[in-house]
Length: 199
Image (cartoon, rainbow, N blue to C red; front, side, top):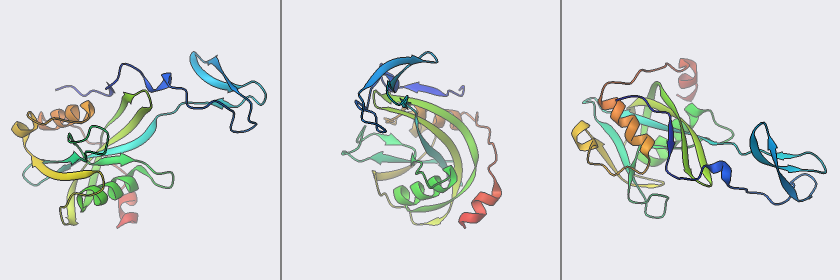
């Protein structure tokens, strides 16, 4: 299984959506301009440019001692409700991606983890409003009690055969878990000091 890094759940890329009508700096109406080959909103009065940037996030392959992977079922009120995904979420402004991994795993699974490293970085064009850039991590449980929370309503450890039958919310998650079970994951170490600061 080959490592894949760009996914599109939508025919429309997030950049096709225009989110602002007026300049947040001076109040003037924004106009479409081509800047460095991309269509962007720009203010003719103060030169403000509304750049459309992806939302950064993390997802994590939490491995059991037996080599299984932990997945969670998304709540019905969330996007792709009822489907399965790896634990993860958006990086808050005050956090590092490592902080986010620990927080999201605790919120969604009740577990404490030890992060082993980075296994991929993926771009997800989810729909016309959401383009995410996701750091994919791998790690193992170091404590806590397994219980679903936040956006997840159920948790499940799966092996390679069970994985084939799962209805995933995100094609990126399916691809990442495919690579894991195929043994096609290389781990880029993270700064051990960052993990220790969180301990």
